[in-house]
Image 1: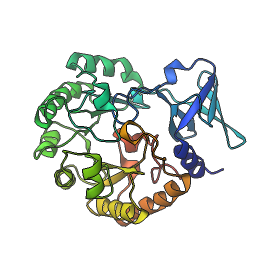
Image 2: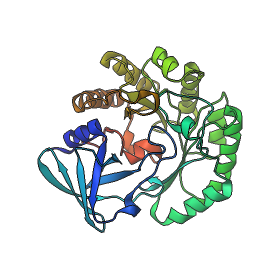
Image 3: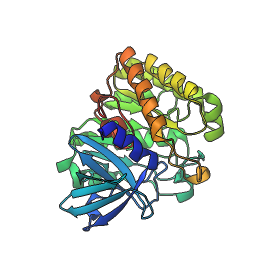
Image 4: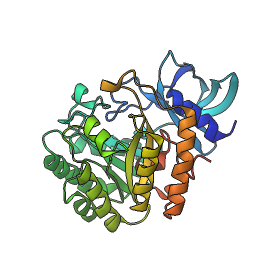
Length: 322
């Protein structure tokens, strides 16, 4: 089975039952997004490829840890040898940190508002990065919104000022205000990701009440001007009720604006519990459209230094998952 086929099928399920030897050091935890507050997840790798799967004892996918990271994937009647990949923080090769683990907004697919986590201190964040700096090459920052968009941005900028000490590329994904791209650029950030989340403005309004779809587009366009080619990204969740035609139009629009789409299969939690994940066949079809749109716009996802596109665990990424 080719990697792209295998990964699409695994992402269509989204989880694995981890068995065998103890594997605590290979388990990644999420403090933001749909995976926040769960059992954790593991990264299964084959060669240069990887996939992230949430831990679920009831999953039809089994990964048996044989010790020291060696692992066998049991899926579809096949045994596929590979390895578990040790994360830095949240994902391999990076310290991907959620600054504020709570949010005043209530996007329907996100568990963060229900968890109500705290804001990390700068000292805590510095210590977290220091603890893994020997096995990472980048730092990525995301955050909920504790009080206001402006307050969160100001705090994240202060965090970035301190993190520059480590001399690594920094990627940032926060909800933007008008001047966010300029301020992040001035602070030395390498890449940004502002998330339109849904394929259409109508779906965005339904899924993210209180947030401004056009504001995010404005921030993306300004970011392309400032950060340049292959340095600006945007999440689009696959499976919120959009048609393939709507999703294709969204992918092509983002790419034509110089933005690399991050196509994230829906994790059905929070208010969307029970919503089906997108099928492997749909993910493969969309991958082909994604690949074509990037090529036509002269974009290369393999150039990503930080955040989700660099990790490539949760999504099919053109150039990485061939």
